[in-house]
Length: 339
Image (tube, rainbow, N blue to C red; front, top):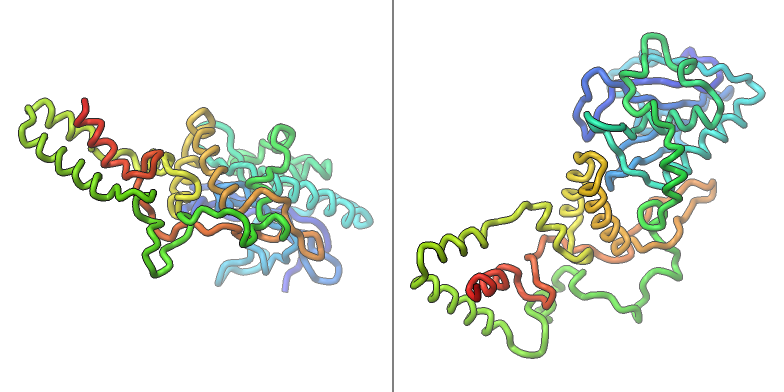
């Protein structure tokens, strides 16, 4: 049982990122406590694809900001916004519309020690601005903007420059856009089916596996007679590369969900710039291949339904390959031998 009067409240709790506490920083969310005792939350967070996710249409008890086990009600810093009771529904509707616009756009989530933050608090700030509520008047007692990373950013410029993204924001596709049995689907996307159809071997009707083996044998024979300089060159050439860079060399349809997650982790950790943009392009290509690029589907009350895959992703990471489908390691050995 809580003692809150009906109204729209801004509340805060300790902030964390990927389960890691962020010092004294706080996470803000909005909750509409209605006269009938029900509630509805607007909140942001880190989405599963490293995007700025948004949650609306759920009660506080159903949301990710529900009280933790053993946490007592009314103990979180909270402030009721100065909104007349007759305008609560209309104001909340404006706030929710702005939050859902952010959710459809799927902007990247950034919580960087250097540079601009773009976090759950930015969603709250955008919703406050949509309702023309000054952020200074909305903060609970004892809560300052410097412990709310991202509250300074209302995402206005980001939304202007990034309209709802058909790849990351509205992925899923409609039924008439999903693959049918007649649509061409790369068989290398599928996990092994239990019989050997050659999909995971070197491609082509010619028998090339023997050629690869012969090439490897020749390379080994040549290295036996190689000079110390040539041996060092080959050793350096065959050194393992950076794991993320190796993943980026793969085609989108050859990446696993785990490899995609590794790319997103690296992207989130980087400051804004060319390297982050490069990672964003690769991860976006994965999402487009995995989920399609059709418009999002919504439920009966207008909430966006989580997109479902339209193509399978490999279950286990595969080796890097050259453009002609040969193992990259064999290709590098061939280059090294030729040089």
